[in-house]
Image (cartoon, rainbow, N blue to C red; front, side):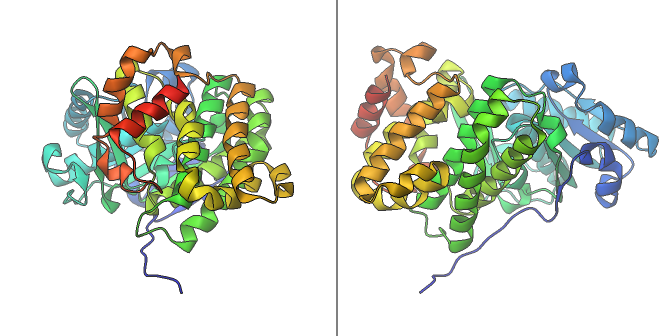
Length: 387
C-alpha cells in the first residue's frame, strides 16, 4: 500500500543547450522591467552570464547585477544583496551560478517580496511570503538548488542555518549544459558526488514523506551521474556528459526536496562551516563512513540502488556484501576523480573531532531522516573512521 505524500517542485523547468542566452524569452512573463541578477566573481571572470545579460538588456530590461556571493554565504551578504535589490527597485530576482548564488537569490526574492525579517523565517515552513518572481539558472551539476525549497546560510562564525519553504521554489528553472563546460575538474567531481549524495539519502530517507516519486527520480539520477561523472571530469568538453550530469543533479534535487537528506549532510555541514571545505567535498569525505554506519539497518536499501551507480554490483547477490562494496567503491570513485578522501587531507585532526561531532548534533532537521539513529558518540566514531 502506498502511503500519503506530497511532492513539490519548480513550476516550470527548461532544459536546453543555449537556453541561458534566451532567458528574456523563456522567463518573459516573470522578469518585469527591472530584474536583479545574483551571481559570484567566478562567474563574472568566465563571463558565463554575459550572453544572458546582453539578451536581457537588448530586450529592454533595466538589469542590475550583484556579484559578491561567496561560498557558504554569510547572513550579512544576504542583507547587502537585499539592500542592493531594493535600491534597484527590483521586479524579479535571477539566481545565476552555483548553489550559493541560487540560495542567496531565493532569500533576496523572499525578503524583498514580503518585507519579513529573515530571523523569523529560519526553519521549516516559517517563511510567510509572498516573494518576488524568481528565476534560477544553475552553472554546476550538483546542488539541485533550482528545484529545492531550501536556502542554507552561514550564521555567526560557523553555524549553518536554513529556510525551508515551498515559497523558495522558483517560477522557472533554466538549465543550460553550455554553462557547465568550463567547470574545473575538482568542482565537477565534488559537485557530482554531492548530487549522488542527494539521491542516495533521498532514497534511504526515514522521512514520513519518502515517496515513490522521489525514489524513482533518485534511481534515475544515480544512473545518469554514475555513468557520466568520470567522462565529465576527464573529458570536460563532452557536452553530452555535461548535460547528463546537469539532468542527474536536477532529478536528485527533486528527489531530496521532497524526501529530505540525512546524516551525510548533517556531518558535512560542520566540516564546511569550520574548515571552509567546499560542500560537495565535505559530503564526499563522510559519505562512505555514514553508509557503513547505517548498513546494520539499511543494507538492503543501499543494495537496491548500488547497481544504478556501479552496474557490476548487480552480480553480487548478497545484499550486505553489495552494500559494503557500494561504500568502498564510492571511496574509490572519489579518489579516482582526484578528490581528497580523508579528513586529514583537508587539515582536520583528531583534536577537532569532538567539536565536529557536537556541531553535527545541531542539525536536527537532517538527523531525524537518517535510517539509523545517530548519537554524538556515533558521530565522533564516524569522523574518526574518516580521519
